[in-house]
Amino acid sequence: MNNKLFVGNLSFKLSDRDLQDLFAQYGTVVSCSVPTDRDTGRKRGFAFVEMASQAEAEAAIKGLNGKDVEGRQIAVSVSQPKPKGGGGGGGRGR
Image 1 (cartoon, helix red, strand yellow):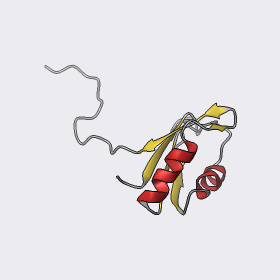
Image 2: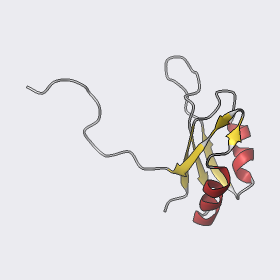
Image 3: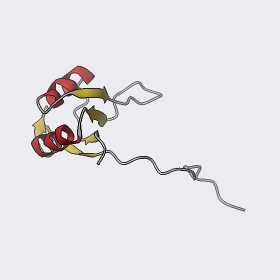
């Protein structure tokens, strides 16, 4: 298992700092990233949090998955790497 977590269904009001403080209850937060929409700059409702160890990542999942944060029930799971190659496009093959 890797130590990077995907956090879904976040409130748009939640800051990087708020998220870091929330996860710090379960161990050392190595990094915290709340992606924003490229065009609008608005938060996208999910984040990635990296914990210092696998044990801390597991503790954060157990402690926070399904928890109500800012009126929303968050989902916390191990982040899955993006599949390589063949991205999007949407065009038709000829």
